[in-house]
Image (tube, rainbow, N blue to C red; front, side, top):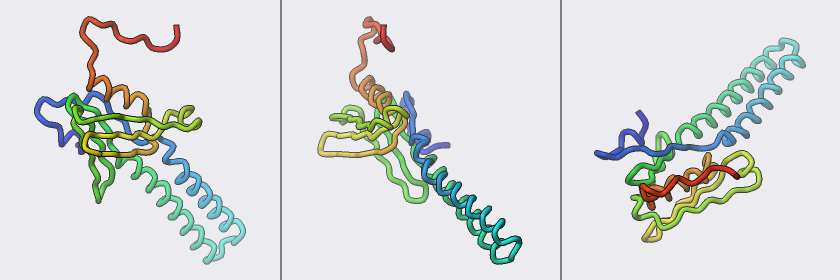
Length: 168
């Protein structure tokens, strides 16, 4: 069971979940591929020499560790919007949590580079009353996250039609 599910209060429902974007895996995968290529080169150039085999195995282990660290980093972040609050948890052994009641959210900003806009990730800046200022990088679907928070803070009246999606 996830941290978010464990900390829900009575009557609290998760309305939206997101996490880190898959691009956080880019550099770990690049490093992993380079280390695998180095292992293959060592094996071919070493022609079965014991030192070459040991170095190749070390490269393969380092490649596996690099990719595993990226996967763990991505999966260790949970972000959710409930009907009562915004919850963000990061870390596995050492945990950092931000739990901000919806009524205390002063603003929520989204910063996206061109690559972020194209791939669907960005930086989310949440400002709460009392000076709380939290920044989260590489969040998947940051505009949808902001929209979900805003809709929970200011719900549309029941008789108001839902906004149209896309261009007419």
